Amino acid sequence: MGHVTTPQTNCTDTASAREGCRPKAAHDASGAGSGPSPGGAVGSLSRYTAKLDAARSDDAVSASRLVRFMLQREAARLVPYKRVAHCLNTPIGELHGSGSVSVHAHNGDAWLAGLQTCGSVWDCPVCAVKVSECRREELTTAISTARARGLGVYMLTYTASHARSDDLSGLLGAFLSAYRSMVISRAYRAVAASWGVLGTVKALEVTWGGLNGWHPHCHVLLFSSADLNAEELRAGLFPAWSAALSLHGLTATAARGLDVRATYGAAEDYVSKWGRVSSSRAYGAEDELLKAHVKRTRGHHMPVPRYSPLDMLRATACDGFGFYSELWREYSSAFHRRHQLQWSRGLRSSLDLSSSVPDTDLSAVTPSDTFFAALLSEEWYAVRWVDARARVLSLARAGDSAGLSALVADLYARYCSEYLGVAA
Image (cartoon, rainbow, N blue to C red; front, side):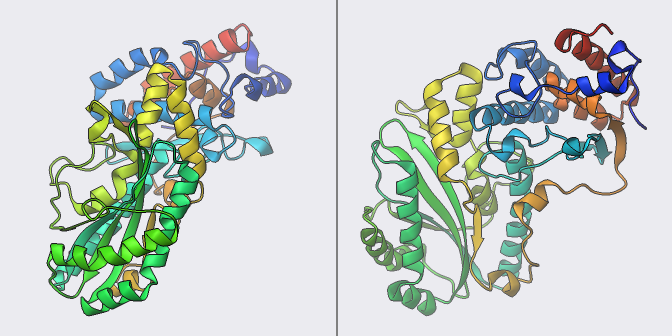
């Protein structure tokens, strides 16, 4: 399919009128510049209900993608000053007078190109899934390589005591400082050396509960040349962890501060079915390590529920709860510029993995020879005006070029008449 054409209207008869088709950023608090939507506020689920029903009738991928776009817009509304406000919304060339967007399709999937991407695994539900899936594939390879060489792989979960009154930024800073203090301590190094620890991969996670507030913790994959007993490993490492916590004003109980278990690629289904993890295989340690921050917690149905950051976005998008909006903003600020995944020095090369690719590069990857359609900037403004991105991609996945052309033409005519007030 080539460039999507639309009927000529009064809105595009002249160059000055065409420039006037650009949406006014002042109308959109998210900073994405899409103007008000016909269905009401961005934070309301009502304007997505019909689209979600239609997407479900197509397939589960379309429905999941629509939800991710909905939550992305909610994140953009909450932090309009961050890059997520422009992610897959603002054309790359918009500031230079050009803003064409291309649609790509290949092997039953579709995506958009020519748009800014944020690459944030913390703020953006869209980029988080894409980046985490790429990282998961790396971890799968690492675990497979380690097992083929007869190495042991263990999952450790470090946590600390916390209270409802704790500020997340301060608590997170102290927690990460404690972890750094532990891994450079003599006690930890002695244990690691005696048990043949080759390296670790650390992933950061946080949840919030109504009883004890913020709960930052980290999952760590530990690679060892020896076959270790999980309980002995926990008993050997906990004193070093407890001492490091004390240095930074934190504590942990022996029962909860450190959990250790051997991983065999089939850990319990700890996280929700978020992302593109195949349901045909067992849920593994590599999944738990990476999908934590975009999962739905098992505790949100408990009498005193626990919420992941994604749960908070859902609560604000679906119900407009201001309380969870403020929680999510606090989370976004505290995790700004934090690394989702950290490999210990030398571990990647020892497992024959190439150098790590930055998250921002992973979120912007577009395979070649997959072009399906092109949209002019004015056509793209019409698409994002009602956030029809998921519908555009659904049609591209189905190879329906005629349907895509008809959709864009209809949205463009409505955009000119209903938003710009120009007769089509």
